[in-house]
Length: 278
Image 1 (cartoon, rainbow, N blue to C red):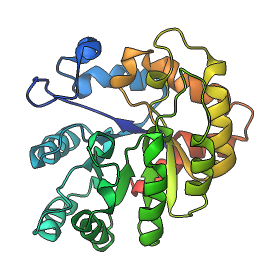
Image 2: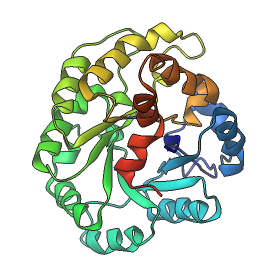
Image 3: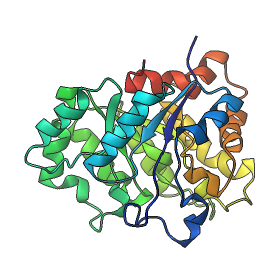
Image 4: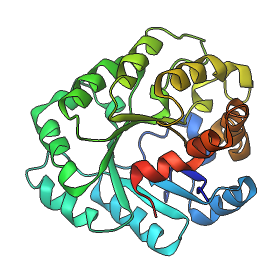
């Protein structure tokens, strides 16, 4: 049986110093968010497991998430953070990759002042080291960063990448271009997958309808196909704009007319294969 996997969610013990990206509008999630909070939501929607993704850029984040994975079996994978520009990046990667549930790395690229941050020599050297330890890389971008991501993914054809949150298009405004054309160019690279995640917070919070997402889902399903897309909730950030079941429902409603095999791939099979989950 194919596992149902949420490919993208977060945990934290909240403090303002540790999570400076949370502003006034994040008040509902400025609190401790831990596995027991998520467990009943997974049960209610029939999800078998999750991939916990970093929300802080320090090595303590890796240690924190891996400790949760050790305690809670449903945390089947961890996407952590290591400074890919560090001189000892190989040693850092080997340290964490030794844990069977450490499956990938992410950097909060879209918050960097330099849009071309990923093209820096130090960062590229770190990316080059991921293949040796069999780690995936999550691309966290705004639409304007997609052309840079295309350049990076072309430089590392053997490295597996996954685009988070369909690159956060302007769903609230209904704008499709140039996002759609850039997504098509990125999807033309067969070493790039995409998470169908993070959409509700790009829409009008609590005022969205299913149809708001259809044009964007049409693009990513046409470009990536059902074999390179994976559901992700972006919980608990998603709670700012909708419930967990609503977020699952957006994707399940859209794929409802697909075959059972295609639905199973999007709702867990592709994430399991991409991250090598057990």
